[in-house]
Picture 1 (cartoon, rainbow, N blue to C red):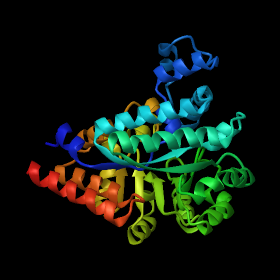
Picture 2 (cartoon, rainbow, N blue to C red):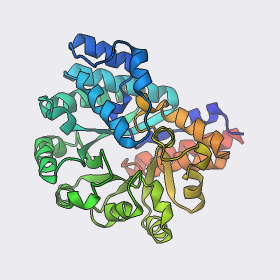
Picture 3 (cartoon, rainbow, N blue to C red):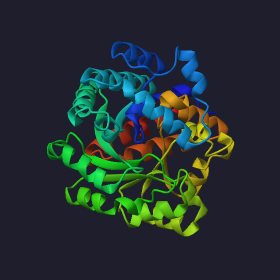
Picture 4 (cartoon, rainbow, N blue to C red):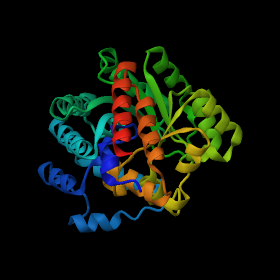
Length: 339
């Protein structure tokens, strides 16, 4: 039986986390009061009752409303530090986190307000907790590619000095295929940035293939529905692409009706490289350790499976080879101790 302590002690990287989705209700309400933002709810319990998502768009409607309380660099700093404290408690050693600058600039905030507040907290997190971090900005796929290019231009000073290391693609998947953003992703690759994209969460397997072949991504976010296409599975395996899977998110958004039906074990058995992540934990009810525990129980994962998932998270990260080796050696050491 895999224990919570064993999972916690293994060094792990989180590769699929939306910072705005780590905005806990208590902090949301506190920031709403501070910034005089009317959320339309009178209490935390009333907001919690609204968290009855049946599909991705239901969640996104509340997600974008909630981020409206974030107004200052300090707000973004506090949000990020609160998330990193959870990571410390869960045994996370490295994070590669997303943020949605278009969701903030559209509200009239300068790009730097979010980017600088988040960046300062990520640097402090390494100092205080020893957690290394990299920041990825996502384009909102329900907006146009022209708007994505405008956001890209705002971020260029942050690309130049490594404060933002890559671009991603999130928001409503249905009706917004990866090919819609082909040119801006080409521009990102030309700038030497890492590229990732949400695909195959609610969109078809073809979206996963287009993310790989058209956007030429370095990593697949979600990718669940890739399993519907054996040829695509073979290609993902051949290319060695990591999938950033989010079990509790999939359950809450009805991507799966029961964690016992989650495709994570099938991915492992197929020789793919899935990882476990928390996505938007404040909304979906669990940070990284909770996701590991839930899926380990539901799928009867063995210790070897958990070790593989931890190794996948390190190998699938954008850390240097030397940093990866350090963490992989510690995973091996912890696995040996527990035998």
